[in-house]
Length: 518
Image: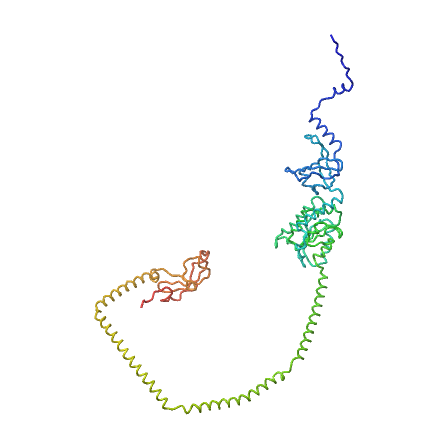
């Protein structure tokens, strides 16, 4: 029987055999708990990589990397909607969150709860990129900017109600042209700043003209100076679009003169300070008086100079005009010359006609005139004879035809036809009388006419106080209505004619009456 040799058990192997067994889930959860307990909240600086926008669920997944390492990152939907700075591919940021693991893939990640650009350089890069994007859309074009009203009656101010800015602006309005100031309180710093400022601009534009709250004639968005991070709410896209879309002229007064934000580019005017914005919006009362006095002086001097110039021009023109005697001297001389020629011309004309008459007189003889008269008399007598003969022949022809027709005419036939026509005419007359409205009136009805003689067929055609004419079978009467058509009088006595009958007067031949046919 061969003996089998057994290797001695070492100490390491004995220790391994004493380790408790763990499931994969238990180990993953233990690692997760250890990692979260050890690190807690951390701030990581890195470049955003692999960002493709929010997932369909609203969560965001990307990675933070530097030149040597990379860590996965996730932003839950509720946190993403409240972020001031949204993730952008390639942007260097500082992320604040908790380090944890994702057991489903055995990798660790950071759950981001706050995100900010890494330094002013990153902020400026983001600002320049947003400025370029909005500028390409035309939101900063000078052509779309509106002119500020010269004398606004209502000023809308979007600012913090507790800061020194609003006090300085209201103090500046006291010395200026009277205006009504409306303040829309907003936060001028923080996560909700951009949303509140945009809503305030849209709210002022939504006020109706002539409503209980007056609609501003100009809007001022004001804030004191601060760092780039403090003023970042006025660089948000929602604020820039609200300012560019404002139908009311808007003045941007954010920060000091050296500060600038994107709302300055979209506004219709940019004031270096909030106090200067108040001066631009409303002119100073004393300056208006001084300007009015200066303009009045200039107008007075200009009118005086214009009058002096016109007076000098009038005098110069007067010196250049000829005298009245010189103007009429030449026409008077021509008149005298024509007058002299007229006498000689009349004498010459009379002499010429006398010579013409002397030449014609020898050819004029009474015998020639008598011969012409005799010839005309013969022609007239011959024409009379021809006309008489023709008339006789025509009369004889007509007489013959008349005699032939008269022979065929019998008085009895004519009388019979006349009797038929008389009976037909009597029947038509009786029918016309029965159909006439006077016969209806004689049966107890009445015809109502208005003041213009038109028949009134419905009560709704009547108005209160209307004058009417009522025709009965035996005459007319004038009345006046007490109420409008369709309304019965309440609490009134029985209706009586407004004009009492002074005696019915029979009339014939009133509109619609039938007259004789002959």
